Length: 140
Length: 174
Image (cartoon, rainbow over all chains, first blue to last red; front, side, top):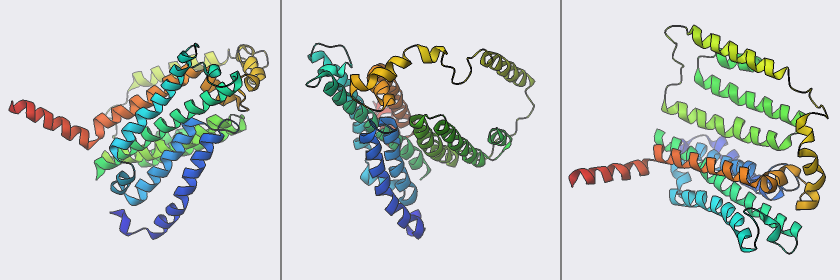
């Protein structure tokens, strides 16, 4: 459909999409020291996919992000969160009490927050892409 | 304010979607001015970005012109004005902006600001509050996002519908 035309859009978005993905990863992994975190990173990551779907059409996006992969990732993210929370049970602490996960309290907190934010990012990104593709495919 | 009135006046829903995107961008700027960079980030990405795209793709499925109501609804106007009046009355009771003695500044916030970096080793207090001190809340939020995704998948994804229809016809056949 749109793939045959809009040369400028295609070229510019091809340049932009890797940068957006990189920026999303930066927001994800730098969220502890700068602004941002899992939610924002997930949304930015999804924005790159949505831009791709807008320019190249949802059919091509499905080849990168098939439905089974997205629904698996949606569940994986929240299970990562849940698993991090439940892992503290093994060390005798309460749910989501990460202090016990590492060598000392602060290291445990760092690890716990990192995993939890990663879980948030994965789920948010997968859900946003799923929602957009669900709308876009209805049109086609 | 001007943008909000423009949103109300527009009949074309595409223009409304673009204006609410612009409104979100303005709000993101406001949050930056208030030093709430994390919130501004989320507002700019979700409010101005993704929501607009979703609105527009939803409009592509439906009509893009707002239907003119047949008769004006006075009860709705009275209710809206009454609610606004109650809310403004409530606002007049709030502590002044930046008041150091306000309950919001006295409760747990000082402890977070003083201790978060030592307790979690993370310089960004917002992250440590979201992921550690308020881990349960964030988990709930994530569940909401997941539920939204599952809901949209069930309603909109052609594959799911086809499979369900097939199942129904199978059941009809048996």
